[in-house]
Structures are given as structure tokens and as C-alpha cells.
Length: 221
Length: 210
Image (cartoon, rainbow over all chains, first blue to last red; front, side):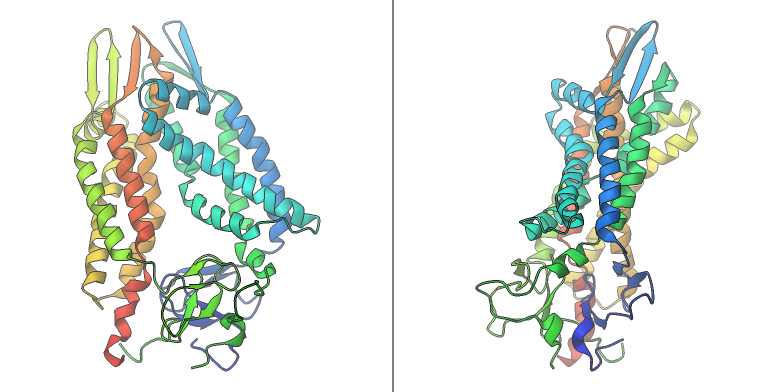
């Protein structure tokens, strides 16, 4: 596992820094670190096309999930429905701006930005064109992604539905189903996307920096 | 431990945190920009332990109001009920839905506490350059990263309930001040986990022959 004489495909584990050689292509689909076991990368074939397909599907579901009511309820003849943006506005007016901001960031803004960023990258790439600012977008995606907590929100939705059923008649709305589907497509999209292959398209020749691509020239000591 | 494993740092290489390219570490010290993506290269996350401690301490402090103040305020003709996180769990249990009670208990009590304790232990063990069970500690860190996000559950439950149940004077549910404190605890522990550099767990292993 330790560095051999062919230093071309060296990898360092992000979680324990161990240097190791990239395994032969198609050997395994998930490559894990030899020492600490964390995932180094996953084999993601057709990353651009697959990501694009899932991202387009997710965009439609994202709009439906946010434009329509998630759930409605009736207590003694009075009813109320709520959508996700509606819930944020309601929370805001109850003087819970911080909570509204946090929920908005994690369920709306972060997933929305990830979708937009991925579409910006893979749509032109699908047609053979490289959009400007790829490093910036990849970096931004990397820092936003952990803040998208849609799957937790989905579970929260289900728990609240069960809780509310104890005292009222609860009607699931269109957006609830859209959210469930969005979650699946969004996860598939994230799994299909391979930032490594996009970084690899960017040459190491940047103006102003001396060549030092040890990824190619190897660990010489 | 047998022969120390060859890490990028020991081989004089730095892995770019953004694009994963390996570059030669500068001999003279000082910062280097990644030749491929231009990000500033760091051998390890800068001030990782100090930042982790700062965020953890802030999280511990906010953990107190998060558990003592009401999370959800229910108003009905019968009066007003304040529910803390714990009393919300007890209420779910007494109203007969123990699976829900268990779920909320796990997400709101167990996970945040386990996360605080785990990160404290990791930061402490790294600070004293422990060589004890690095595989286990690496596993703990991965668990924290994977499971940590689920503690946001209660914040979402309150959000939906408070938005939907606004039928004064029949029934109204409002988010209580604990929602802010609890949300802050979740965010702070996410940031703490993020500022912790798991490579520090492994660094002391090869120390003796440096």
C-alpha cells in the first residue's frame, strides 16, 4: 500500500494523511483508506450526464415541493395549510427570525444553491463547454453541501404529522410527496456527482505559480 | 506500533483541501497556493484544536438554556402549556406513541450529548497527543459527522407545528426560546466537528522516530 516506484497515482487520505497508491481502475467501486477506512472516492461513471439528469428532475420537484402546501389540518371546522416558505414567514412573524433563518438555510437555501451550482456546472459540460469559474463553484458547493438537511426535515415533517393527528384531522399536501421524491432524486444526484473528475479537467498550469504538481512528479524522498 | 506509516506530511507533501491535488510543501515555511485551484494549502487545518474547543464550550453553555427553557408553547382554552425538550418526549410517551418518543429522545437528547462528549474526548486526546486506539477514535469522528445532523429534528418539528397550528383561540403553538438555543447548539457542534482535523489523531503515531 505504501508508495511504490510508480508515483503517478498517489493519494493522501483526507482523514489520516496516509499516502497510498490509487488502485487499478474498475478494481473497486468504493476506494477506502488502507489505514483509517474513510472513503477516499467512489467510482462514478458518466458523472456529468447522470448529475444533469438527476439535477433537472430535482429542480422540478424542488419547485413543486416549495410552491404547494406540505400539509393541511382541520380543528373544529377551521382549517389551515402550510408550505415550507409559508412556515418560514410564519416563524419570522412570531419573532423567531433566527430559527426561521436556520430552517431556511438548511432546507431551502442550501439545497437550492447546490442544485443551481450543479446545473451551472454540468449543463454546459454536457454540451462540451466549460463554464467560467469552475473552482469557485466547486469550492462553494463543498462548503454548502453539509448544511443541506432535507432528509432531517423530511423526518421532522413525518413526526409532526403523527403528533398533529392526535388532536386534529391532518391532510398531507402535494408538496409532502414532492419532498419525498425530491429527497431520493437529490441523494442520487449527490452520489452521481464526482468533483474529482471536474478538478482533473482544470490544468495545473496557472499563471503566476511555479510548477509543483507533486501529484505527477511524485514523492521523491 | 510498527514502522510509522508514510503520510503526505512525512513525505513533504500537502494535500489541497479543495481539489485534492498533492503539492510539495514549501521548504521555507509560509503559505503556498495550490497550483491547480489556487486555494491556500495547509498541512493541517489551522488552529484546529483551539477552534474546536471554542465552539464546543459555546455549545456546552447554550446546551443549558436549550434544555431548561420551553421549546414549544401550546395555548388553548384550557390554558398555556410550556414544553421543554424533555417534557415533550415524556408527553409523547404518555400519549402512547413510544416509537416517536424514542425517535425524538434519540435525536434531541442522545445525539447532541453524545456529540458534545465525543468531540470533547477527541479534542482532549489529540491535545495530549495520545496514541491510544486511533482506529476507534477515527470511527468516533466519522460517526459524529454522519449522525450529528439528525439532532436538528426537533427544530423542524417545532417549525412545522408552530406554522400550522395557529387557530386562536382554539389552539395555537409557538416556538419557545429553547428553539433558538437548541438550533445554536446544533450549528455550533456541526462547526466544531468541521474545524476538528481528524489527521491530528494519527500524527502522534510516528513521533518517536522524528
